[in-house]
Image 1 (tube, rainbow, N blue to C red):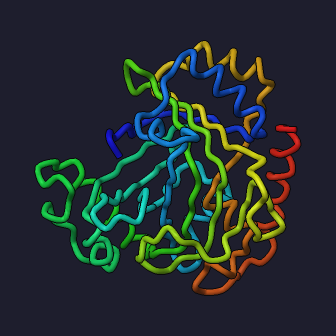
Image 2: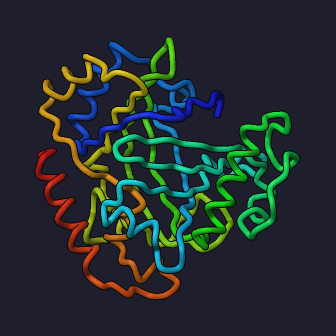
Amino acid sequence: MLTDRLQLQRLELKYIIREERALEVRKFVSSYLVIDEFGATFKNLSYPVHSLYLDSDDLQSYWSTINGDKNRFKLRVRFYNGDPDAPVYFETKRRMNNSISKERGAVMRGYVGAILSGQCPTPRMMIDEENTKHWMAVRHFCDLMRRSQAGPTAHVAYEREAWISPASNSVRVTMDRNVRCCPDHTVNLTTDMVDPAFPFDNPNRFEPPPAAKHVILELKFTGRYPHWFKDLVRGFGLVQCSAAKYVDGICIAGEERFSRLGCNRPGVAQVRAMERRAFSLTCCD
């Protein structure tokens, strides 16, 4: 990545829209924001995102979202390609009521396996040894990993189109396409996926859809709700909904494929997921 545009604390609103509507939203948003510098290097303005999500053997992080816990967190290791020299980001995403906060540190890929196996991270493992924020972020990640007894659980991938404010990092709009999810209990950090589920396009099949029909639109802001967001939502008739890639991916694919203990609460999450998805997809039609 050329520049780290991470918003450390923000509010975010999610919508599911069809591809044709996404192109109209792109045109509207381009009047206020500029395309992310990394995405601008791709023909479709979208760059690949891969995340290895960590969870406990009984999927406590997953169930925390299913149950709607107000204060919860997710642990993930994010990477953008298979280059052995490219940085890997250890990310902690917390939700406190409606507020989202993120903390992440860039690590050299060669040390990922050791850190996830329990080795204490040191500054020399970071991309930038002098940046203590990165080191502390990874240490906090490891503390939560140990306390929650979390390990590699799922590989989530998609293509992201990101629009950012040219003046500051206070406003960001993203559109994610071709979301897919599969079990992964390894630390290989490969971009390859085995039998992924497509929770927002083919919820009942594992074959890749002929074309991504639905796009996850996220409006993110760190301060006051931008006035033009209101125009965007009203003008396109958007209906806010849930779109948790990790959780919906597991719901559609089946908990038994991800849990190391097997599915001890069968059916409940899948039913809730299908209800949420049916509502969301109806709203975007």
